Structure formats: C-alpha cells, structure tokens
Amino acid sequence: ILVVSGHAREVDTAVDVMRDGADHVIQKPIKGGAVSDAVKACLERSGRATHELCAQVTARQPDPARGLVLSIPGTRTGRRTRVTIGTRSADLPNRSLRVLLHLMVAKLAGRHVHKSELGARDDQGFKGVSELRDDLKPILADGTNIIANLYHGYYRLTDEVAIGSCDIAALIAIDEAPITDLARELERLLADSPARV
Image (tube, rainbow, N blue to C red; front, side, top):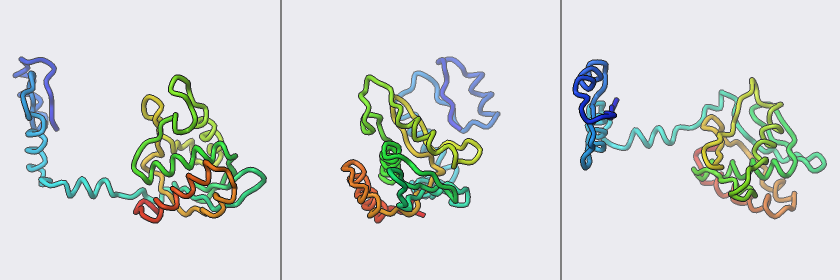
C-alpha cells in the first residue's frame, strides 16, 4: 500500500498509516522518480520484482463457469441474428448486432470502443449501446451487465465475458458491409486470440 500525502507536513499521519499497514508514504512535493521507486520497492518486498506476474494477471481468462460465454451461432430469423450468453439466446436486429460485434472485436484486440466508431458524432449521445442492453436483458441473469460504460463515450465488454464460437460465414451472409467487415476482423482475432473459449 502506497500513500501520497495531501500536504507537505503530515509526518504524524505518515507514522500512523505506516503502523496501519502502509508500505510507503510519499510526501509532497514529490521529487523525481519517488513514485516509481516506491512501487518498485513494494513489488520487490512482495516477491514480484519482474513483470511476469503482471503478465499472468493480464492473460487470465474469464471464467466460463460463470456462464458469460458470448457466442454467435449464426441462426437467422427474419432480419435478426441469434446470439447466446451461456445457455440463453436472443435474436438481435442488425443495429444491435453491429454494436455487439464492435465490442467483441475491441475485446479481442484489447481496446475500448468510442461511440464515434459505433456511428455517433462526438457532440451527441449514443442510443445504440442502450438498445443492445435492452435486447440482451432477457438473457442476462439477475440484471448482469456485460457492457462497461467508461468515460467520454468509451465502451467495452466487461472482464467476465468470454468470447465463444462465432459462425463467421453466417455473419458474412447477412450481406451488410459493416457486419461483413466486423465479421472478418472477428475471424482474424479469434484465430490469434487466447481469449477464446
């Protein structure tokens, strides 16, 4: 635990927080590499002097036992495409499918999606994510939310979501250019990604 003081003269408070379990107190004004030196010292004391453990945590996969495996089996009913989360299914209209595909591609690429990528202008809100949430609500147990709304119009699938199998040919057969492009990108990422279940 690292503590950064709020004021330059908090010596008594610094002693108290060290007694309460803090590993290091950095007092203001902060000089040079004080923060990185303190982090390095704490990691070394805990036996994590290398980035190996960080890499293991980053590579940790979602737990499929939680039932949040997101798949697209490719079944079409009219102008809707079936998606599954765990054992439950919903048929999404193309507008929601596009948003979901963007989020899936971004998850596999390790990034977030900005609303402008989903068709919104920067100066306006975006209803697409809300519509997708509404379309998925019946198949998500106990009001589980699989879409994180970050900041300033950025979205991502939550860490608990694992990407399962996707019928790329069925997605391409929808014959809508944005869906086709996203399906091809999804196919490429699934072939390269360990985040697949």
